[in-house]
Amino acid sequence: MGSDRRLARTEGLTDVQREILATVRSFVDKEIIPVASDLEHRDEYPGEIVAGLKDLGLFGLTIPEEYGGLGESLLTYALCVEEIARGWMSVSGIINTHFIVAHLVQHHGTPEQRAHLLPRMAAGEVRGAFSMSEPGLGSDVAAIAARAVRARDGSDAFLLTGQKMWVTNGGTASLVAVLCRTGDSAGGHRALTAFLVEKEPGFGEVMPGLTIPGTIRKMGYKGVDTTELVMDGLRIPADRVLGGEAGIGRGFYQMMDGVEVGRVNVAARGCGVALRAFELAIAYAQERRAFGRPIAGHQAIQFRLAEMATRVEAAHALTVRAARAKDAGGRGDLEAGMAKYLAAEFCKEVVEHAFRIHGGYGFSQEYEIERLYREAPMLLIGEGTAEIQKMIIGRRLLEEYRATGAGRAEHRAA
Image (cartoon, rainbow, N blue to C red; front, side, top):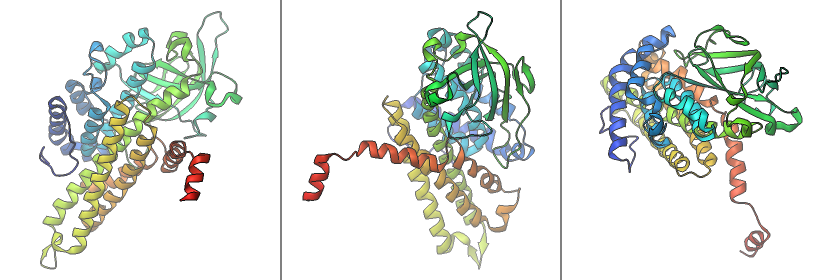
């Protein structure tokens, strides 16, 4: 689809934002969509595509200009992610964890950490990954078991021990933000600290005390490496605590800030995948004939297309609102949770509608919708399940609409 497409438009963009999006959209149409399904079926890392993203400067999209980045907003980033996910969701995953780590360094790092890491991250020379989950836990972050203890050699270094799970870009990244426990378990989330672990890309024992066993085989979301991360006395200097000494015990709050922008990213991915599913379905419906005419002429198909388009529009609008709320500098967990929840659920429904419109051909690997059908479920669990999002939304709404004595009295009087 060209720049004049009817769905998923965004009002109020600057000329620079429109130019960036047009460039990304052209790249997706020319360099990603034609090869995505072949690469995905082979579970092959899209090296040439990633090199192209690097040349476009997308690894530094939100990094300030003073560090060599483009200094763009979360909204610009989310809209770029929507375009990239429309081409192949795995590619958006490759830049998402990088973006989260860059956000953490930019907003929570020391001046030295920003100067050391951000210029190389903006250039795409250092690529980031993000690690919280463990084999025995997912969303229960306060229960993290991986530990970091001070070395007993008189230095300020920490020794990290534990096993992490579901690390996107775990093998290809050269910088991993790792959340570990630095205090007593009774401290819950107040005893967690984030570490900036620099490593060599690859698998096996990539440095003393750190092993990346290999990639985890998945139903979808292929091409991007998803790994475990095993630490056994991994030595990390104290100046690699995110935020320095002041960051000790602050890891949970720092990481949740990263997850919040990550949820906007996942919402944008849902928008992109849903938009692509709609494009495939409406094109196929006009080509495929049944009972003497294109199936698009049948009311049942028109109803499906109407439902799909409405979901695409609603998810896009809520994602844009969430990104703008975060860009405004205030608390954005309510908007991000709503956007992630709605976009992921709607994406699943739109993809299934497109699958049904394709009929038997939707089951064939020769058709793109087969890949989307396997990719969409990841969005239901990535960056927190639907149930977690609804818990966040519910709690925030109760905070915003907290009942007071006066409020209850007014309600009774009414």
